[in-house]
Length: 352
Ligand SMILES: Cc1ncc(C[n+]2csc(CCOP(=O)(O)OP(=O)(O)O)c2C)c(N)n1
Ligand SMILES: [Mg+2]
Image (cartoon, rainbow, N blue to C red; front, top):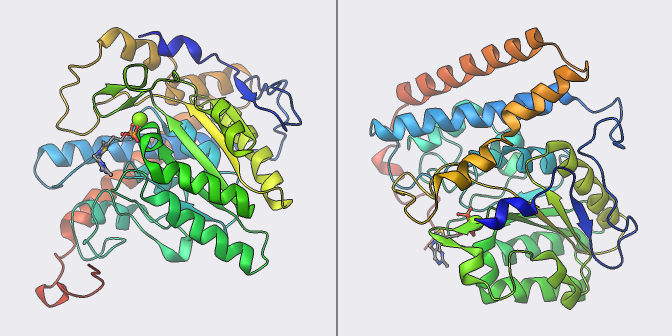
């Protein structure tokens, strides 16, 4: 219950070796280092796209058009969009199974993404991956991984290749708080630090792993970033409901990685407004807590702030929403009209 109070509106705290000494204030647009080049409306468009895409996913799951597992990112949009907006096209992104938001923020085709969820041959993984395995090598979007923490060593491998090839590209690896109790999490952090890999470990701390609150299952409390001192990895905490705070904090970390300073760690405090999956009745948490977080919904608070500051008009926001709504509607049509994978394809692209 107490978890939401930790997440103040302007937080970004950092551990030792941090040049900013805990004074990031990106949430205040006027004080922010984010300048005129920031496309605020596009950040909103992306978050709204993810939200509407996922609402459509939920509806089509209920209809039986999407099968298997479906984990929605609703509530966490500001985190993925803020972080991914700082990357270059040659950087790799590795995600967890709650991956739709990261994929869309990376610019994966919305039609092909929806078709993947429908299991159709036009999908990003030819319909063989589904919700948890969106992939697009051309976009350097390397999944969508169903095994909790399984993506961490894979991401380190990509970062090792980038280092070996002497590029200044980097890999960002998203993972949930549930990953942190896996041994491979610690192994990867350690080796990445020893080898000074160009990798950004991005923890999306949404306070729960399935039905377990962090407070109940973690001895050290709800803050993970202070523990990075163990590995000598500079770490920051950021308000994951604030897209600009996430963007600014990620920009700093990315700059350090490109500067050859090795791995960095960001912990975004965020929240999923919906259940773990569509099969979750959420008996383990009270609606009061959910409501508290919903008051900070970036889909509502961000455009409200932009309008209040004269950075956008309500007409512009409405226009963006109409365009996105149409695109999402069309993506469902595209998926519905796409063929199933051919049976002759059953053994291709499959590795076991
Ligand atoms: C190795 C492994 N163990 C267990 C599971 C089952 N499982 C799926 S999601 C999940 C919880 C993960 O929580 P978290 O990392 O916090 O991600 P969130 O769902 O909050 O985004 C678990 C235990 C799994 N997929 N992989
Ligand atoms: Mg979690």
